Image (cartoon, rainbow, N blue to C red; front, top):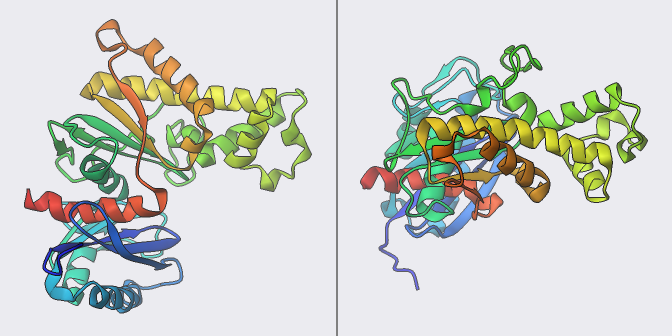
Length: 323
């Protein structure tokens, strides 16, 4: 039975479409949670007003503001040092938003902000597959590719707060153009759910190989459709996963040779493809490592429940600060 005096943390995860938030205890139980739309808020002020309204109800249910130790927030382009969201392409508010200060003023609580993938890494270290590890890389394979690098037990922020962006590293010089950044050949353009869809469309166009994917309307081809075809043994779909795994494996080999992690933890929608993506990823990672790094690094799938992971990661920032 939980003590009514035990301190609790608030976790908020701001996404391009929706924002999830919840109240979490020190061992990682999400006691109360809810979500709201991000994209309908054209201004940050109305967003914070609605967030305050929803969270106030949860705070009361959890025993009042006095039990709250602080607020942790994960957001795209969230800067740990300055508490600002800076030029996030997928959010409705442009420029630099002093979100930590705005939320802190509204709730009268201490606020810690980081980017969404870094929050996931801290959550994984505190509650998940990386528990007890001091050196690991967390990679989220969703609509994009997010990442957080932990070395010597510390998240690497870099001098400006934006370190660890493996998704924007270039894997194929002069490769596929990334719509959001305008750069060519980034990992995110290939190893995200969006990337798998683009690869499928390219492969269908450049090959005459029969495939179940040819029966689908182009607009409905997504990473799940490719997965469904692959498990039925569709040759083209299997090639798409092989190619995606190769690109991801090469990128992971580069990352391993820089930070020598104990493990790489993968999270997000694309991991549901299981061995279809993991097998080629492992093979190509090992193949591209020099001998001293080979067969040392585990590739793990996150243990955290997808619906809770973002809230857990954000709330973990509060306990991390107290260490």
